[in-house]
Image (cartoon, rainbow, N blue to C red; front, side, top):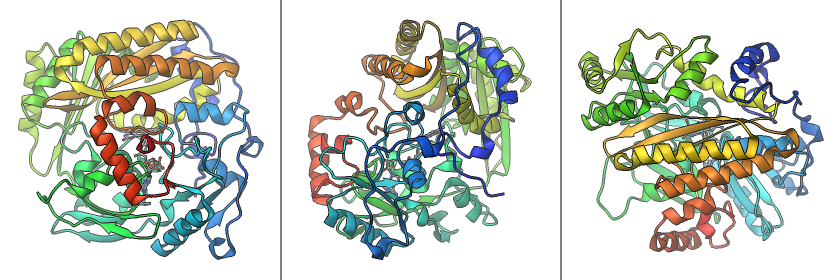
Length: 526
Ligand SMILES: Cc1cc2nc3c(=O)[nH]c(=O)nc-3n(C[C@H](O)[C@H](O)[C@H](O)COP(=O)(O)OP(=O)(O)OC[C@H]3O[C@@H](n4cnc5c(N)ncnc54)[C@H](O)[C@@H]3O)c2cc1C
């Protein structure tokens, strides 16, 4: 069955969580929310959402791949953050692209850019539209008569699989599962699994410097980019060389990794592959408190054992996740996964020994074993939509910081978030987990839940977002380990970038995109 993208929420409409599935979850969450949440108010029909900006008809020569249809413009008007989803329901007119182009060849892409340039339109590269930082929203467009969104999913072919080099060369608009499917039978795999895997693209991963759910070694996509090609607004193409490494000046790949659609349209990428793992092992280890679990995580990361998976849940996150699965988890939990071409039992045993030495107790993979974790991981975003029907605010923020700053940071951010939830919503809960670990530091991922009010959701979210962003910046964390900067983090994150680097990037922006038409409104314009 062909599934349909949900224009008002996450993923496919057919996979939405229904009332029967939601009821026991609401029962578990009621104590956190200070009682039963608000009455359900389903999202409006897509045809009822007003678009703030008018459509601009494309010339007849582009009509085959440029649409001004209401639903298409709506689907490309917002990413999939809590702010986006609340905005879609808010009733106010939504900034939307004037037209959506889905070029099927690089010639059609060049024609789209030429039309946008001649017409004075902004152009927003769009992969899967799963941005959670306002990366593809046509906002802050006062200087432009409109924006054409360029959906890259028409450029979704695998160009070459080089088994000897273990590199796949693919067009940027290919979605995660299609890229992985193309490798079946080669013994090789991408094994890059962001939670948005089913609905995000290779180009989007690279443009945001995203991370998959592997906790060490293969975490960040930029480390796996061997080469890429980029098209500029005047139709020129820049292609970096396919090399394992080089010392010829600064790395050109790194200019476009994290460029968020503002320095060119990434058309294709050569990505390093790994062998399909022949061996997999996992372990679950309980700790009395998160601090001990963090110390064990640090020791394992610094021993350079490289677990593929090292998720560490604080007691609240552990309690909520087990309660949703019908059991009662106490204390902090570390979930370890190892995989490789060769036996990984030595690595697993060494990590478990280190965890034990830090007070951990191995568990039969009971509470939240590594086994069924993956399915629940991909299902979670659908829950956010179902809870939003009841005005429950569910959002996440993530960061990275050095080990030496971690304990103080964790406590100050938890406290600031708890206070903000209390002030803004009266109740709520905040949980934290380790998603990625490095020898010199760690990535922490916070989730919060609070009872909102249907009529005030956006204001409440803005107040919460401002408070948590301030806590992250004050504590010395980055505004994002893998979600990128977009429009939502721009003002808080700008201060992380040295002034000299900001002006260097502004120089690059004016050389590559002299009119500033590519995704205006991000920090690249400063
Ligand atoms: C439920 C959920 C879970 C998520 N989990 C993760 C996670 O585990 N890890 C993670 O890293 N992120 C995660 N994200 C965030 C998001 O999925 C990532 O940022 C992803 O990399 C975006 O890919 P996309 O193809 O959807 O890009 P889009 O959202 O379409 O675009 C993101 C940015 O990249 C630019 N862009 C896209 N394609 C191109 C291109 N070809 N050329 C130039 N610029 C381009 C856009 O202009 C925009 O600035 C999650 C998001 C959601 C909603």
